[in-house]
Length: 533
Image (tube, rainbow, N blue to C red; front, top):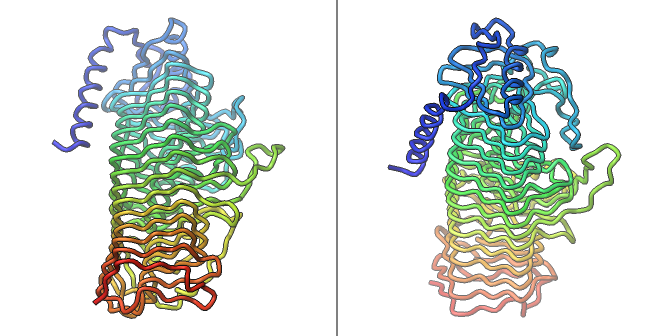
């Protein structure tokens, strides 16, 4: 039995045990308070009475039996579980007047986005939404771009011990679910489909601590699983595993808002693939990026580990960006300085069906991305691009909104790395479906670089396998080039290039190891025990 199926079986067993225990717990049937499951009767007041009665008695379970229950905003209470039974649909009203505006006490940039939701809660503890039913936001009735008049389906602010398990969520007017400044959040076994309006994110975890997300299927037009920090509080101690993620934009993203930063984040054992049979509001049909790590509004990104991920058909498999949009999270707040981006490990990733852009890892002049390790990564690209892209000058775009296609097609078909310190690449395999005349890897203003056991496909008319400009303290060893024969393995440019060692490379299809530009010192490179034909 595979891991995902085994986890699903465990979840179903847990849900069944929970349902069986309902009779032993204080349970409040919404029908006893006047709710009617005909899909036509507005049940807001009746359901809220059931929730309030449950809370007044010290907590318990509010039961939504099979049926379609139409509602406006429901205010969750502490120690209350909403149980959506099999065959139940809790559907949002299409009338905005049924969603009273509410500004939470916690200030964040999301004040610009939303003040309404179907299920709302603030300053709560021990709350849950569970079962085998459906939360339907009726989002097709709110198909316009303006913010602050399209409700979220779930919005919980500054809550503790929150659990969302088993349910299906679909068709939000805006983001599907937003958890802001919450502690001890557990999301397990949910299914999300969100493709009916603009800004249709799947799951947004914002400035939260101690978060577990597992066994979920998230399919959305906008970002599928997005960690945000829209206030001066980091999103930290987050574990994500055994999920399938699909998006027309970014499947997994930290950002775009990053004021509080991201610390101690792990993502493992996940599949990323394009959505199926949905129109596109944003992005591209196959998805913009698989994994996008971004810091652009100050904040620190530190200690991020990503492993065992399969990416299929997404435009840019990896996108790492330190920028400087410098947007305050409140209108009168101070402008943040440039953030920091360090200590990222990405391993055991396979990607195919990518676009021709390549994968950018880009900091800023004087503000490097630091200590990135890429290991055992295999990526295939379509290729077919001409040599004119080799000399393309890539703009810095310091303050531009970060997106994987922001620079256009890059001078490398594989990895384009700029303003990076402490980059270690081991066991990379890069290839193209069609001949591509760009380098496989380009490094520009990179210090403390190690490339070990690179296996790169390079066309015989390509400019070379690697291009370094102003690269210092680099070791390139144990590499192999397929294709060719090509003129050189490494094109070396920039007056700052130096302390570069090539050793134990087997390059039978390469006519020479290094092609130095005129400004490069002859002593910049040391060659040791390399093999040519």
